[in-house]
Image (tube, rainbow over all chains, first blue to last red; front, side, top):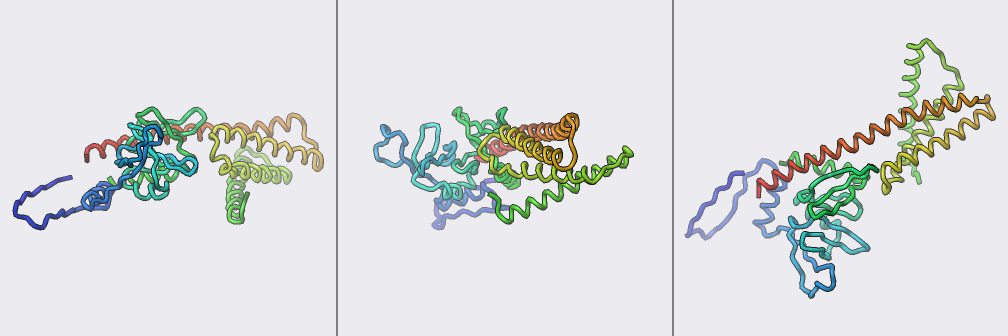
Amino acid sequence: MKLNLYEDKNNNDEHVDVYYSNMRPVIRQIIDSVNSERPQLKGRPADEDLDDGEEVILDPKHIYYLDHVERKLFAYTADGVYRIMDTLASCEEMLWHYGFVRVSKSNLINIYKITQLKPDLNMKVYASFDNGERICINRSYKQSFNEYLQRMRRMR
Amino acid sequence: MMDRSRFVQYLIEMCCVYTIISVAGAIVNIIAGTQTNNVNVLVMFATCVIATFVLYMHKLFDNVSPLVMIIVQFLTACALIGLMLLGISLFIEPISARGWFEFYRSFTIPYIIFAAFYYYRVFAEARKQSELIRQLQQDHRDLQ
């Protein structure tokens, strides 16, 4: 994508014009950044020993996956696990343009963090991440996962 | 377990399966110069009902591995077919040991072929998706 920057010290009306052919994820991300609406998840360390009561802001690009366990939502990053005060469904909607796709009732994974998709001998397909963890892609979500990848491919 | 719309869907699929099997059987008969009889037609229909029903249960196995699903479905189909053959043997005409063997063989071989094809598809599809993810990641890196 071509980027033009114009510096004018006398400009009192700073603005951004975006020329695009279709509304693909990268355009959506630019709009969110300009509007300061880039999604940020707020969480607290899941490990109570590390939790000092302060909320941590998580950038979606650092999250491997979200896991919903016993009505609690956790975000897994390279730095650790954080409890998120949000629902999995709202995260799914918010992070759609950021590479997050639902692969089971309780998991939303970041496709940009996947190192490999590999089936086991028992034919269950797992997404592996570079932190060594892996998440099973549930068979009932297989089609929607594939459709998501195809839509992302078409929107490149 | 099965609501009305799913039952209708099951009937449609079962009809499609029976049509394909009976047309294929008729073609084989024409080529081989053989003939079938009424009992064979009914057995073929009953086998289609059982096979479609067993395969239609796949939604119940969403949380188990596909391999377990394939094995459980096969064993269920074997049990139901056993009951069907027993019924025929008792009420219509006796089936010899060879008849039982032939029936199970003609049922098992296509099942194994389709299971192997499914197994291959799972691996091929994962490989394709893995490649697509790599391309998306590359594009994503280029844009950052």
